[in-house]
Image (cartoon, rainbow, N blue to C red; front, side):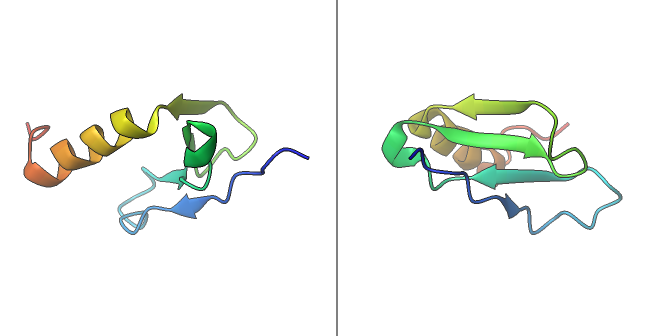
Length: 66
């Protein structure tokens, strides 16, 4: 049986509707899944765990501010 994603909604999800959910329980399978929380049956983006960690580190350090 395949491992099912455990979706976690962003702690910033009450910011006006721009919400994502992330499933990090799949890292042992080499992937992190991301989806729009308003469309749980819609498309899912997948990233390698190292790529996801680099993205999160960039967000936390302010690399993506306008």
